[in-house]
Image (cartoon, rainbow, N blue to C red):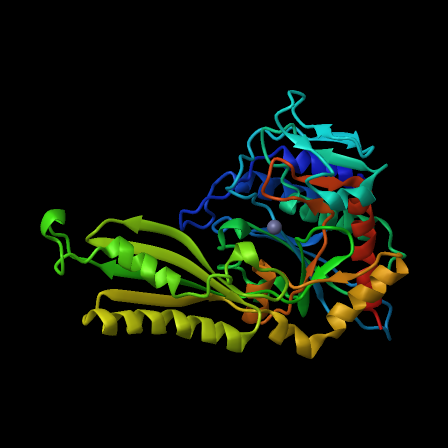
Amino acid sequence: MEDVLDRFLRYVKIDTQSEENGLHPSTGKQFVLARLLTEELKAMGADQVYLDEEFCYVYAVIPSNLPEGTAAPAVGFLAHMDTSPAVSGAEVKPRVVRFTGEDVDLGGDGKYILSMRDFPFMKSLIGEELVVTDGSTLLGADDKAGVAEIMAMAETLLTDPSLEHGEVCIAFTPDEEVGGGVKYFDLEHFGADFGYTVDGGFLGGMEYENFNAASASVTVTGRSTHTGAAKNTMRNAVLMAMEFQSMLPQAEAPMYTEGYEGFYHLDSISGDVEKCTMNYIIRDHDREKFQARKDRFTAIGKYLNEKYGGPLFETKVWDTYYNMKEIILPHMEIVDRVKEAMEDLEIDPVVTPIRGGTDGAMLSHMGLPCPNLCTGGCSCHSRYEFASVPHMRQIVKLLVKVLEKHVS
Ligand SMILES: [Zn+2]
């Protein structure tokens, strides 16, 4: 049996960074890890191992070993192979350090310091082994910790037939970080009754609520004239765009909100006197409040068009994903089984609403209820990303335990 740490160290060294380019997969290099996982799954004796050569999904099955008279649903586990475009994922040089509570100088040159001052939750990790970066890249625990844990779970099940489980469906997906992760995912081929993405953070974390999400834009048409003769003739599109922004509730921005508080986020602005475009994202956990936010965005455009006497503000709003909660609620047993498994392993369950989306949110709305489980990785998308070795080992046990809990 290979330790989950060794798997993890092997996988993070493979560059699988995805890109915002509309292609599927967005980068060919994700196939390198996909091929390796395919080979490893075959070698450990998994069934129906299949690599989708077009869209870069890896599927596998571990058949049920239940005796007659016992039953279990087909449980899916998913993790994504790509890493965030935010920080380089090339030539990751993971290091294992024992965390003493002192600062960790990642590169040895004082430039990037992993410190409890910046990450106060690290206090609970004193004495543990952590995998850290050398400061030049992200680590890729998001989500190769999830990949390694699912692989280690698979090997555990295949090596120890005394562990009873129903059918286990495994999948590794590309491009989660650029929002295209499950666009071509074949739910029927996957075959699970429900799933878990293993793509969260701290040990004990579990999520089954996420934002409802929309993107929005407003394009303002102005009129340029000589500044010396501009009075009552110029329409400065940049100033009018600022007026639009000023009419949104100013405290409802990401930098002022947390928990279940939704927001409007002005993501970019570009333009000049003649034309100015602002791009937004709109988020709220609550479906009604989400709708109210979108309505307000459109209403401001309408109001300003009336004020200026013409269609100068063009607003567009389109939904991108929805809260998985409404899909999970009728199936709360899939959350409860995880809580029970955690309690058996003396892990404190911490259920929080995600302030973002996951592949699981989209899968849930495609018909596969799919909460998200912890990986033991922290501070993702960053040079300060790290993973706790004991947490990763606990999570492998947790996945096995979750399967046990589903047997009835
Ligand atoms: Zn992730």
